Amino acid sequence: QAGLQSKHPRHIYANPLAPEICPILSLGIFWMSYGLNSDISMRLFTGRHQYDRHVYSKVLKRVVQSQAGNVRLLGGKPDEIGAHSSRKGAASWVSSGSSACPSSTAVSLRAGWVQPGVEDTYKRFEAAGDQYLGRCCAGETSITHQHIEDFNLNRV
Image 1 (cartoon, rainbow, N blue to C red):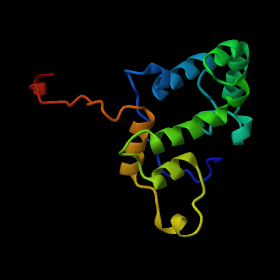
Image 2 (cartoon, rainbow, N blue to C red; image 1 turned 60 degrees about the horizontal axis):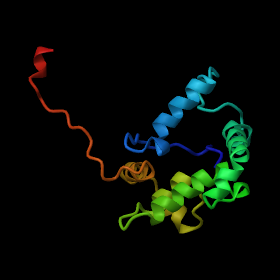
Image 3 (spheres, helix red, strand yellow; image 1 turned 30 degrees about the horizontal axis):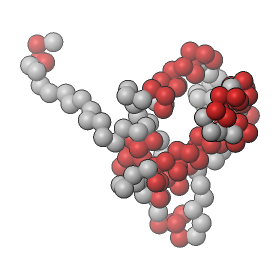
Image 4 (cartoon, one colour; image 1 turned 135 degrees about the horizontal axis):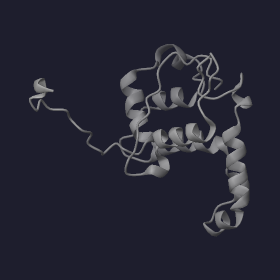
């Protein structure tokens, strides 16, 4: 969970039809709000440890507290909403939101969950599984992406 063993890329995809869950839009808003990290490490978030980087947690908590009445109106409990819910919720969503869910191995690896025993040895990262998982997380498994065709581009 600390990102110490993240030797494989994590595939993320935009969802132009649902901006409220689009990770690319969220990243853009984050950078516009807080600026780019100029640290030489090139980390996305500042801080040495995962729990040092809790700007998101603080902002989320403040927003939920300020909107507690509205959260309750919608049937939610403000004290049950937190940053950990995002990762847990994504794992639950992709594991049960479809009849064609990503593999449990891909979900466990993406969530940073330990796979004890044989699973750590024989169940490994594979780009195709993570790509499908990324598309499921973005809620865009049914979107057909643009295909670039040869429109006589040699004139350009």
